[in-house]
Amino acid sequence: MSQLSDHPPIPDWAVPVLTAPKTVIDGSAILADGGSPLEDVMAAAESLRAGEGFIVRAPFDPTPLRGMLEQMGLLTVASPWTDGHWRAFALRP
Image (tube, rainbow, N blue to C red; front, side, top):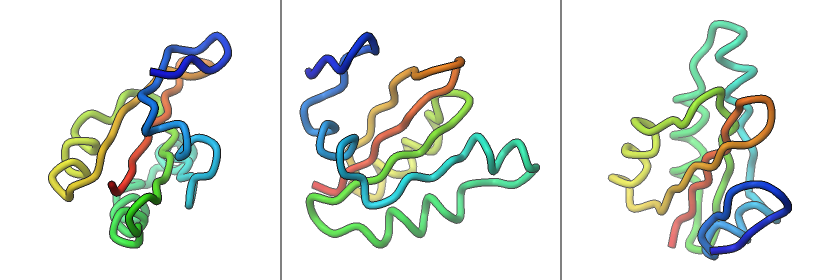
C-alpha cells in the first residue's frame, strides 16, 4: 500500500494509474448534468492494453461499476478524495 499525502493508502498497483492514467472520467460532472458515465467507462475499459488504467471521479464509491470492471478482468479500488468525492482506479493487468 502506498500513502499519498494525507489521503487513504491505495494499493501499489494503483500508483501508476494515479500518476499516468490513460484517461480520467469525471463521473461527478456527468451525473450532475443528468447523464450516466457508464458508456464512457465501458469504452475506456475496453480500450485498455495490459498495464494501462484509468480513473473515474464520482460522488460516491461506485461499487457496482467496479464489480462490472472486475468481471471484465480489471483490478479496481476506490479511495475517498476531496469534498466527499471518490476516485476509482481501474487497471488491466
